[in-house]
Image (cartoon, rainbow, N blue to C red):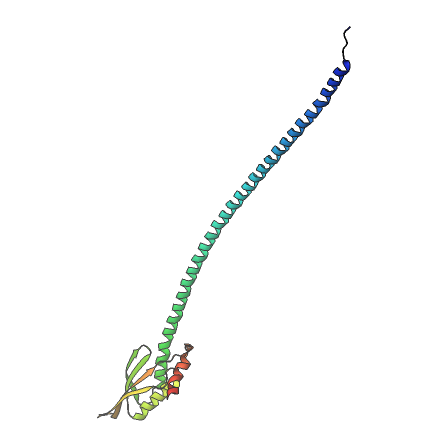
Length: 206
């Protein structure tokens, strides 16, 4: 009579049924880990790509702004150059105006300083120094002329008498030929900062 151990067969079948779900769980777990890793790596690459695109956009925007700023700076430099040129022209015009009015005032002051019986025969200028020659009937006329020039404020003190010569004329009598030297002192032009100190130095030495 043949005996079959059904109990052993059932036990082996039970073991198989219990082993299969465990293997499935390991496979599913590994698959989930791989899927999560793949998703993480994919998200990381996507984030890197997005950041890279954003950086590229920022760089392009910054380059555009840099070009615009360069254009603005070029225009500002051009305006500054034009402004400097205009300022130079204005300064030159002002200097020419002062230069035009200065001689007119000087001639007016000389004309006003001429006393009676005194005539001018020559007027020469070297930079700011005037050499005035003329004739008069007396030495008093020469001293009066020099005093009037000094009192006008347009000539530096002292106004020097270079030469005086007596001569006789059959019609007019005695005549005095003279020459004086006067340095122009325009009161409309401000004095240099060290001008007062320089002017005082010779007097201190004396």
